[in-house]
Each structure stands twice: as structure tokens, then as C-alpha cells.
Image (cartoon, one colour):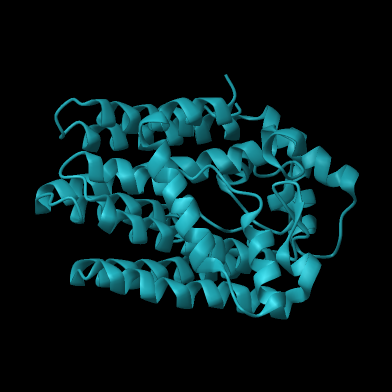
Length: 329
């Protein structure tokens, strides 16, 4: 069963609510300015896995399900996620995402920046509709943390001395923070206790870390047909990720170390050299060590989840852990 079919099965119980989130997103994302509206509709034309929306809704289902509150929160989180992807594509100079042209490739960096800003502005009204001060603080803190994570990524780019600890600090801010906020927000709006809110936050942060580790592994082990971007794309952009860090630690003084240093220096490198490094990392122990780390964080997510009594919704959140670590391996 492929990823799409797996998620379709897992999300069957919330499919109608997922569709409503998509509908409201489309409505809120429209603009009366034709060029901005065209760019916005293009950005929405290639939907992702809707994992963040599902986590928000499913976390809410563990207690008192209040979809009228979870709806604007889900849309707001998806808008933030899409805005960060648009801005990331500008920073990375990316021309495709999920096999489609990026907004910046079609309309230029200026329109793309402003579209991301437009989405951020739209989230203010969505959060205001919820009328919960805890959500106000969660949302603003989350957006600020994601921005910090993006800056960390920029500052650590092309740094061969990036440590494992530095890598985890970066992905905790940039990726895991938003996933954790979805789970925590769902708990807050479902009348969960402070302890239950914390458990769902821990579930989300650990799931988010495992998610990013696997993403970084797939960049070395898969290709454009399965992940929507060429293998080694992170390396082309000067991003040092966990598989590469571990590969360099295992063989610090071989010729590949010098090759990586040259590629990261920005002095150029042929596609053949990039493929050689990708194949070296894919064959080495760095991949298995990265998988081991992902499994460890997945186990922590499951431990936090199991503080809740058994239910069909808990089962889905449980299966999502397996989905995250096993996808496209």
C-alpha cells in the first residue's frame, strides 16, 4: 500500500472534516487582486499529506471534540505551513516542489514573499475567531519558533562542523515545533487537562523530529519519482543533515570528507560528484544510525500517546507514528 492509500485509510473517520478544512482554506486564501489570487490558487493546487490538519483534529478527538474551534485552528496551521514552504523555496532558490513549479519560479521572488506574508496575515483573523487566549500565545510562539528554526538552518548551511546536537536544535525549531503545536492546540480546544496537553505536545514534538529525520534519510535513499525532488537535493543546497553528519563521523579522514567540504564551500561541484557522495552516504552506517534515532523518537511519541485510554482515534495517532518512520523506505 502506498503512502496516499495508507493515509486515506487512516483518515477515513475524519475525511469529511478534512474536506471542510480544505474548503475553508480555499475561501480564506482567495484575494481580490488577480495576480495574488492566481499565485495563491497555484500554491494550493498541489496539496500535501494534510498531516498537520489530521493531527490537530485527531488530538481533539481524544477528549471533547469541538470541530467549530478546531476548524479555524487547522486552517491557520496549514496556512503557516504553506507560507513557510513558499518562503523556503525562495531561500533555497527552488524551482519545483512536489513535481510542480514553485510560486517564485512562476511569479518571481517578490510576489512569492508577499504571498507568504498574505497567508500569515490571514491567520490572525482565524485565530481571533477561536477566542482562546491560550491559542493566541501558542500560535504566536509557534510562528516565532519556526522563524528561528529557519534562521538556524540558514546559519548552519554549508557548515561541515554542524553537530548532532545542532542538527536536533534546528529541526526541533523548524519542523517539530509546528507538528507539536497542532497536537497541543487540538488538546487545548478539547478541554484536556494540563497534563494531557503536555502529553500530546510531547507526542507531537517527538513525532515531528522522527518525521524530519526520515525526510533527511529519504533525500539520500530515494529519487524524484518517490519524493518529488532529486536525491541529494539537501547537499546541493548546502544543507548538512543527520545521515551526512553520521557518515562523516564514521569515516572522518577519507577522500569523501574533502569532497563534501568542496561541495559545501559553494565552489561548485558536478552532478557526478554529488551523486558519488549521495551513494557513499546511502551505503554507509549513517543511514542506519539515522533510522535508529528516528525509531527512538517514535518510541517516545508512542510512550506519550499511551497516557490516553485506548480508542480508535488513539489507534490512528499510533499508526501515524509507524507511517512517519516507514514511509517510502
